[in-house]
Image (spheres, rainbow, N blue to C red):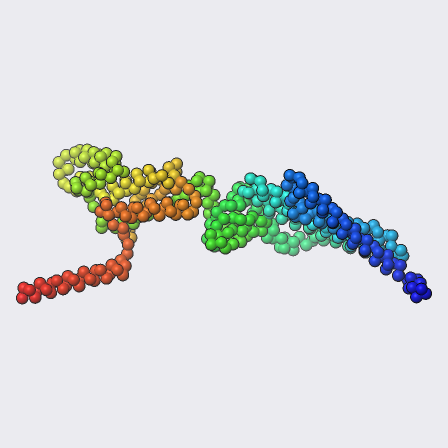
Length: 422
C-alpha cells in the first residue's frame, strides 16, 4: 500500500493515468460509434430504394465520419486531464484538429466518388465521364485540407502560407503541369463532344485501336481488340489526331471499300453469243436491253463511219460485270440502302484494273460485317469466269511449274515430230 501510495504521489503519474484513460475512452467511443452508426446506416440503406445511400455506404463515407468521434473526445477531453501542461495540451489539440480535418476530407472525397458512381449509372453518364472533374475536385480538396492541417500543426496563419505558395508558383506549375494539361484537354473533349466512354478510336502512333473504357483527369484508357490496355495522356487526344468510329456506329452501317483487281488481258468486247448468254442473268434483265438500244442508236447516228469497227460503240465484259455488281449490291438484303453504294473503276496499273466496291452493311457488328463482306467477294470471285474475266495475281510457284511443264511438253512434242519426219 505504501509503495502504491508513493507511486500515485510520483509527479506526472496522475497525468499519465489521465492520458491513458482519455485514450481508452476515445477508443471505446470510436468502436461504439462505428458499430452503432454503421449498423444503423447500412440497415436504413438496405431498406430504402434510394441509391445515394447505397453509394455512400459502398464508398465508406460514413466510416470516415465515424472516425472523427475519437478525435473530438481527445480534443475536448485533454483539458480534463489533471496536471497536464499547456504545451502538451496545445500539441494534442493541434494533432486532433489535423486528424479531424483529414477524416473530414476523406469523407468528402468518398462522397465525391459516390456522386461519380451515381452519375455513371445515368444514360448521360454512360456517354460522358466526369471522372476528370471529380479527380480535380479531390486534388483541390486535399490541397485545402493540407493547408488547414499545416496551419493547425504550426500555428501559422493561412494567408502567410498562401503567400509562400505564391512565391513557389513556378515550381507548382511544373509539378502540376500534367494536371493542368489534363484538365484543359478534358474540358475541350467534353465541351466539343469529341470522346465518350464506349467510343471506338484508332490512334496508330500510340498503338491504340479499341473501345474507350475510362476517361480520367490525366489519362484515357483504351481496351484494344487483342484485350490489351493502352493508356493515353489526355492532352495527346487534343494535340494529336485520332479516328473516332462513333459516327459509323450511330449511322448503323459499316463501310465496305475493297477492290477486285481484274487482269487487263481478259477484258474484251462482247459478241452476240456472249450477249445472249448474259441476257439470261436475272440482274441484267433491265440493263442489257436498255444498253444495247443505246449503243445501237449511237452507231446508227455515225452513218458511213459506223462501217469501221473501231468507230462503233460495243459492250465490254468488264462494263457489263460492273453493272451486274452494282445491281447485285442494290438488291442485296444486308447492304444499307440509305447510304452510298457504288461500283467504280480506278486507275489501272501494273497490278491490273482495280474495280472498287464502295457500300455499307446494315450492321456494325464486327463478326457480321466480316461475314457479309466475305460472302459478297466469294460470290464475285467465282462469278468472274461467267463474264470471261480473270482476277489478277502475281505468278506463284505453281504458275512457274505449270509454265515450265508446258514448255517441256512443247519441246518434247517438237522433238518427236522432228524424229518422225526424219
